[in-house]
Image (cartoon, rainbow, N blue to C red; front, top):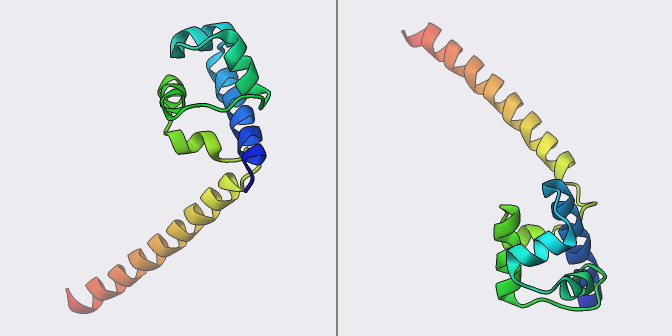
Length: 106
């Protein structure tokens, strides 16, 4: 992955989380201690951030730093649904097996 791609992902994710929290660029910049111009440059991919700024962003949004780099189009929901389905299927089979064992041995 190229740096330009990472900048694009970070930009989109900051906008996404900022929108979820209802924060303007001005308010977010104040909360994390950077200038509004610098935040605008980050959100347009013109500037990169330090690790400290990444930590401040993540803390402000109540997320882990790595979540700032998960593309919005990642199949997270599909994966979560598949895992939930597998867990449900396995749980049903385990419950059935336990019922069979208890009937046979108890």
